Length: 317
Image (cartoon, rainbow, N blue to C red; front, side, top):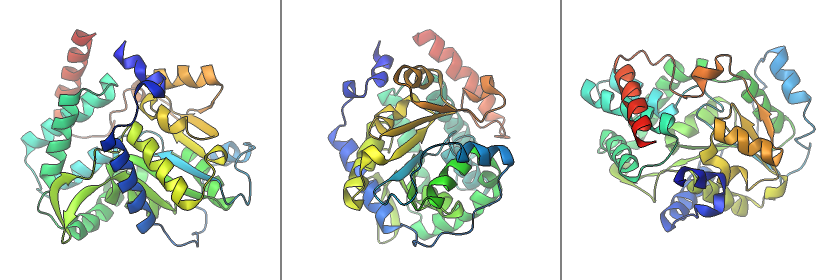
């Protein structure tokens, strides 16, 4: 029954570390917020445009409204941190055995759909060990290259159209993700969005220490980040929108007046239907997409990791 706790946000209250992570993400997002000027809208398919235009929301000219978009499998196919890891592996930041471990962690997280404390700690430590000692500027520069190599072609046109609809209405749009805030900021900038809320890794003198500020921006921490940013920016959350594919983001979706389930997992779909939230599904291979593992990973290790995750999940059930 523990997994069902995510269906009712109050059963999983934010911890002090969640609040710290959320506030750190909000502060980082405000520092990196893009200029008010917006780039010309990108070309989108007719179906995607119709999807955005048919909605009665957003309200044009409402300066106290904004939109918050989850990243993985909502805006982009697959997990941003996995694509980033592929890019770092290509540049010899770590060895193949570490890539295998990384793939396993991503497979478990997406398949199990629950947070095992020991597993989450292990995943966090391995990710931090990769960047420890590297300069923030170095990772930002590499992140730009990795976006072009692995992420640019994985943006969902339908979700991109929804984000553009908010921008066209004069509203601000932020990504909200457990991915590193630097990676999330790059993606937000490339999409012409306002900025990003992401996991904040501690740095001293521009060098990563291998520690986090708070905890990964996941679950309740995302809701805390959105709440903190809304307070700082003078937003009315009842007039804001949030978009996500995962039941883990129910705390964030429940904060706003306009929650959307995008490419939803089974638990979020059930929850959204019960509360009459709007749903959008841009996937073609629904069954495969539910897993959430990047289909084009191109790494042999993912197969073994996925199989192991499925087997372990079944045993725990």
